[in-house]
Structure formats: structure tokens, C-alpha cells
Image (cartoon, rainbow, N blue to C red; front, side, top):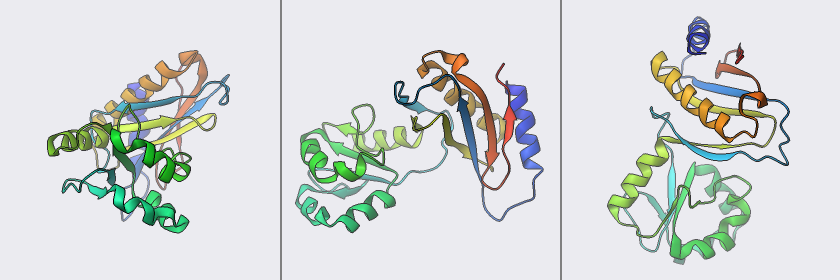
Length: 207
């Protein structure tokens, strides 16, 4: 499979040059998979960072390492528009465990459907000291959340400017994690595709 990925990347790089650093997308097409019955909802740590994520924290006191929303500021988010803008602005939310019940009632209705609620897997902390937050930010920037909404999983695995071997390492890590989360593993995968933002996808057979 690594050879096929290498070939696909070489082909994609032949496409005309764009004025920006394109995102490399992986599409995993599923089969014999009931999205309603079998939910895939996992975090995967990738060996090579894809991008710095914009992170906000629901914390008891302001912290200089992360954009902070304190409990006193929660009431200003009763405004639906302000709430929606907040969800758009940030890729990821973390929270202090002590504030989670209030976070759920104030922000849950918007963060939940967007798949951005702080989670025990990655995002809920007991102590909001600098060291904890810095470590968590590093972890978040190297992790990808994978959630199935349909019979096709599409996610960013890197940037065009990254080396082929780094992209392949990220792809293999993500692909193996998805396989492990599927009820019938490889049997549930029809094929995978690889594309840059502005290119057509290249199909890769997994059998």
C-alpha cells in the first residue's frame, strides 16, 4: 500500500502549481457498514503535525497560553450569533473539569453537533496550570478526531509542502486506526482515495 500511496502522491504533485499550500485529504470509502449502528469516534495521534489548531479554553482563570473564556463570560454567549461565531473561530475546545456542567448547558447545543465538545479523551483537565495546558496543546496539534457521519470518512492528513514519507507515515497511522475501529476491519473498506485541495482524487485499492 505504501508504494501505491507514493505513486498517488507523485501523480498529484504533477498537477498545476497553486498559489497556496494545498491540504492533502484522505478519503476512506466504507462498505457493509451501517453508520447508525456502528459509530467510529476516535482520536488518532499522528507522527507529523498537520497544522496548528486554534484552541480555546473554558477555564476558571485566564491563562496566557490559550484563549480563555472564564465562567463570568459564559452569560454573554446567550446570544446565538456570538455562540455560532465562537464555534467557527476555534478548531478545538478544552475545559476544566469543574466547569464542565456549565459548559454543557451554555455551549453544548452548538459544540455538540459540531463535534467540538471538550472530551475526557482529549480536552478535559483537572488543573489549568501552564505545563498541563502546553502539553495538551501539543497533543491536540498532533491529533485528529475521526467521526463517521456517512459511509465515507474524509480528513486532512497533511500539507502539500510536507515530505512524501511524512505524509505516508501520517496516512498509514490514520488508516490503521480507522481499521482497528471498524467492526469488520478491512472488510468494511471499499477503497481509499487521496487528493490535494484542488485536484481530482486518486484511487488506491486496499486488497
